[in-house]
Length: 166
Image: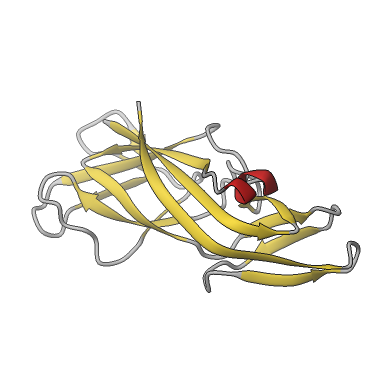
């Protein structure tokens, strides 16, 4: 069992608190990434989707996971379970300093998460307090105008990594 923390950063212009729409523990938010088999090293062709509200029973076990699948190359089973309460939003100051923020922790058995995909369902708040809901980051950036603050807002240069957590 290895725990991986999804860490994200981005360039935030006049925005703060970038996170999934319902917060870091949003049960409806879908995390998409590829998985690498711990046995043969095969990386999945397509992204795997996991969310907190969907759990599956693990065969030959009393436990459950948010993902259970077999490696297409070697046939080994692997699971991914999400661990709530470890994430936080990306703030403006973290963005300015280039620091990564933890978003979600994954308990992985037989798989390693790789290549997180930014998609839709994000939110952020302008430095003037305007909330931008349902931000789609699938194109790699977001640009809008904050009427209240009378300034442009932007998210760009999205980056993510998975770090091993002990």
